[in-house]
Image 1: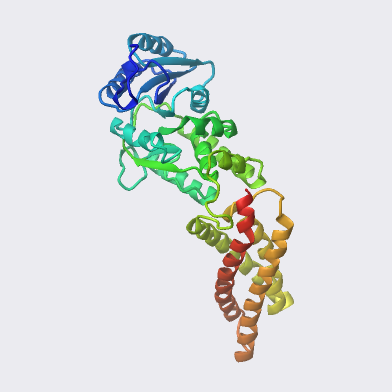
Image 2 (image 1 turned 120 degrees about the vertical axis):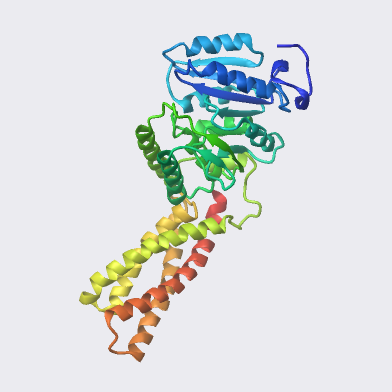
Length: 408
């Protein structure tokens, strides 16, 4: 390295003498054939015109071939390249170790095969260096992304991200693209909460960041899949699903200190008492509503021959309303933990009474005007009445949970 202290926008890899602006981590495991060429390409790109000071950190994940020796040779040969060796495998473990200890302003990583076009590096880190965003991710699923990969990987990727959006309510489009960056101060606050040390690390990091209100910037990328990838797809999918289940339980239980992270990163609600993300809430509420309606229909059909229409409607609506309130509390409005739960359920039952009046009133009107109406006619009227009651319920629950949402 040289001893020249140059302004960040004019510096290159070779000029880094103090803490760099960007620390680009390249996790590797048994990559002796490709490592040297890929690191030299990345080094040349960062040296020739990249506007921020940069360092390349090769994170060796307990390689059993000559990867570590080659990495050490590259660190000796190239300025601004260093090596960190770990005794255990795991991409998340490597990123956690290097990012948590980095002295850079922004920490990033990319896969060693450089599947992502390097021209996306600057759009990835620029919003972080400017302070606009806390995290930036490459997306292969964005509309303007250009991707070359097989149909099996494409299907798995889209299915996984659809599952994330459905089950965890995420808004980012591509959790597993090997091209991400975040501000180092945010990394130091967020990383202690991330438990996974393997492939689910990326997803868990992004879900927690989004739940804490951090701004995630997406960069559509040009991506050419590596046909020689050593990723075990079946094992990765299995671990990702287990990770989703664990993370979902932790979010519902309220054990994660998201409120503290939000406060530490300055991402509290802009206006107290005004919850955000109504579109996402509507989508999740609608999904819960569909499931509740199906459960209501099944219970009504089961009870109506025994109890009669009004009693069947009351019992079916009561059972589904209690379950609906609990599910919407956690899934739609993001309220976890026992605090305020009893009061919110009481308020939910008040809203339930409003729904009962709407649906029971509809049944009363049907029987008054058409005394011989069949059970299918009753059910059709109740479904329409339940749509109206659902709208009332959404507005009511949004009011019930608004204050609790501000305390998270």
